[in-house]
Amino acid sequence: GRTAALAAALVCAATLTAAARLHRARGGVLAPVTGEDGRLSTSRTVAAVWVLLASYSVLAVAAGLALAPGADARARLLAGLDLGRGAGLLTVLALCCAVAVTVRRTVVLRVRAQRLQKVRADRPRAADLLTDDGGHGSFTDVQYVAVCSVAAVLAAVRLARRPGELPDLPWGLALLVAISALTYLAGKYSEGGRPVILSVVRSREVGDLDAPIRTGDDIEIRGSGFVPPGAEAPDRLARTTVRIGTVHVHVPLVPVAGGFANPADTVLTVPVPVDVEPGRVEVQVITAAGVETNRYSIDVLD
Image (tube, rainbow, N blue to C red):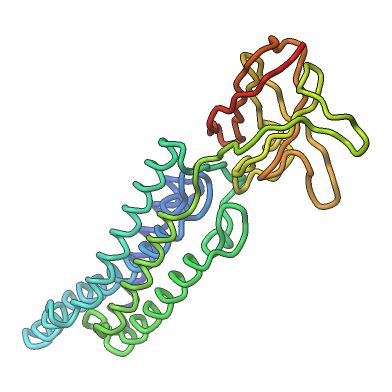
């Protein structure tokens, strides 16, 4: 049994080493679990853990069959692969893999439909498994990783006690993983949203007289979603643009302690350039993720 377990571990290690070498230009061993945005994917990482656990279990049985001294020993090892014994493990494996595929498809479709803003990260980090794109703790991610980790630990303990058969996961634990996976999926469907302009007003300081919007004035655009999660760095914020009529205006950065006051997620201020033709024009914000807001009409006087 110890020899079979060691042989299975060596095969798994060799496979991971080969995969890391083939993908060394894209992150090595982390390449299969890294999303298109350069962050570690929670769903892919969880699915990868269960795939490795199941693969190791089968390899340990295969190595035991190769080293078994007689027909009775081989029959006992083959009985460890019965569906009745490994049904819980296979159910959790199928569920986690389905979640990984569904999440990837959901994110791609929502990004293409401009309902989700994605800004590429500089590098994958372990914290990506427990946080959102902005680096804030995510309840859905934390609970999914926690529940699956507990289930994987129990499966590993059962495998260590009986290395010649698939880990027998209780159906209650499989149901707990299913509830956690559904919660994670619901969180993925509900996150994000398209940026929207709610109002545009003339920016004024205390003591200024009331007046219409003219070329050269500053306008204050109010709404939500102007700064995508993960775009708080200066080089990312500098990509925020406002289209006023046919003129593209880059949003000026206004630094404050701990960040920037302009642009903010709910409000940004830009000047109306003299190139804007007087009359009724449309205002539209293009965020750092390349997502466009709705068009908002304003009247500009000469």
